Image (tube, rainbow, N blue to C red; front, side, top):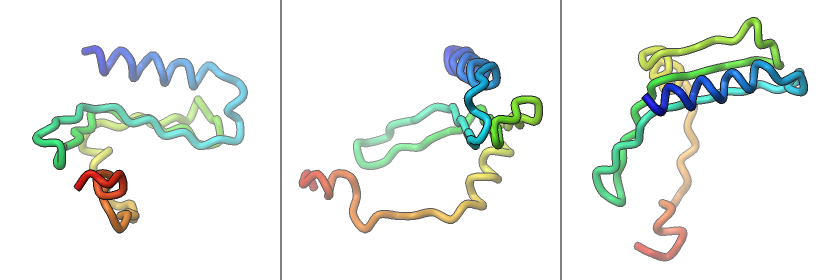
Length: 89
């Protein structure tokens, strides 16, 4: 419930602002399930896309649409993990 409230608070603030005219904004809210320090899972719940500050044409996404959108994106995978970069592995 708290995630839902925070998500709508943020998206309401973004659509009410007038200084977002030339920006594309994507907001993603969800839950992170930590299984171990080395592996966690993000479960998307809500998505919001506002292109070039057009609040009247904003798009909201549910979990299925978010997963489809994210899986179509090309990913950059760094050559080392964060823990390796920090010297902790």
